[in-house]
Image (cartoon, rainbow, N blue to C red):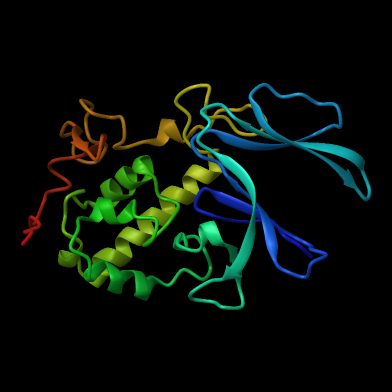
Length: 246
């Protein structure tokens, strides 16, 4: 049975090939991409790719890839073995993407070891898709707030228990966000039924600058970070050690 799979913002559907080589239909959702299964004559505004299909039970159906901001893509790609589980296949354009912490095969010990060997800071590491996937700017800020870790904390300074605690908070944040349909701030970020995600009502750090910390009542601060921003509590998330570059 060919089951749709995903890693990070990539989704793919393995295909049966008459040429006897493994390939898949790969979708990168970008910032606002959606894959919509519709009736055979259905039209969606901002459709970038349309596939007319024949279902063995339901007959003719239409698959529309809709992407308002045009950062996403849909294409055929070859499947190759993963580095950690050769029996598992992923598209070539996904092979460099690490597993996310909700993946049953996520290797916590390997992640911790790689983190300790990095000369970087923890938020940069969380956003590095070759180390760990599935964590964007919002969820990084939320997990770091929950774990009481400053975003500029050097990765090599974090003990194994602190990394373990951080991963637990990352998993909690991702699980809660999934349960609430993600985080929507405007009409571009909706689910396939056109509904907004409600995790924005549960945010403790991201976008909360100038508001009191839910834990200690100190005002949340926003600082520039990689052309974006980092939100944190200066009391709960104190920087313990600065990274010294050679």
